[in-house]
Image (cartoon, rainbow, N blue to C red; front, side, top):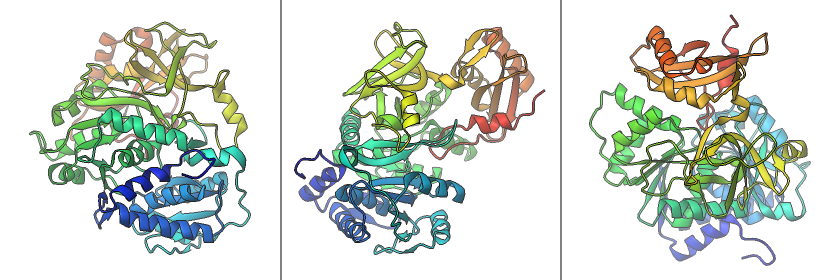
Length: 505
């Protein structure tokens, strides 16, 4: 461990590699990586970074889809003291250029061997071959400005928010936060050397970086790593690849259930090693939870986390079967409050904004003091913008976003409450509810519904059903059928895009 510095994430890997160098860590379609082989790749990239002039506090942008080389770059950056900034290669060229401008990186890498999209971005950037054949790199940016002081030592990575309600912001993720969450995540799932986790979740997202990669390094388990999501491959890995951990956003599980229906499969899939199933990164509805639990004959665990808190704030405990969609209990090192509009604590059961603080909390948004000040509150509390309430036993239920709360006829309407009702109607695969301001200042309630594949939704019957199950002020003004929901690469629904596509009456 380096003198006078806090522990860094690469030290977790180095300790594992030193104790069991021949242990398999990554399994990709192309090859199997032992810790020793991955360590050689990390060392090679560390040397290339140093020879390119990368120093502590610099940013290294990685335009990536999942692969061993991306893992190695994250660890090599940690060794140098630089900050890895992963962005998904399937973003548009304009978006990638925007991330370059925001991150001010010393160098930009492209995972060209596993991603046609990365190849296109590399070509546009006049990228050069890296010393690692699976990567290309843009010319070094001599005018990049390295961060200095304490922040340079604290930060491990920048995670860009999804930007569903505005421009993406660069969340500063600390070594301490990632290491804490690696332990919490591994212990909550009882991860061990015997486990294999399916790892398609992009490491450009906190879910993939923290819950999957860092927790697996902490526990010493293996990752079955994929650069793209393919339902057939998921079920093949469950049947024949020894996968014991299946984790992803609710959208992933919805696609898995939809794929099985399209294939005409009704029997439970063969999953001899599977012992843990988890959904996070987005709200979970009861219908999907029931379907997943029936499919795998395992409880679907749930949690609540966000980029600004280096992973999960709350988790459902291992093996606990809940008949609700609660996100579970606070993890070690985290604090939580539910507050009203004035910041006063609310009693259990009352809805309010979720505030948090603790080891995993970000030190701020990268070079955006104004955005940081918007969300930070006295005492070091972060105001999440999420609405929720705590059960008497302390379990947290998230009901939606503060910005998405609809005010209809003077009443507060939480989209999640309406979505749960409509999702239970026959033929409905997925629901998204949003408000839109009308000329008189009131808000109309728009409900977007996606049908189960090869089925149609009886919209007239659905309106009758809504009238029977929802108070008048909660009933959708319009129900809009859509072929498929537009989503971010991390599985969040882009409601604004759907709202903008609906013409006013």
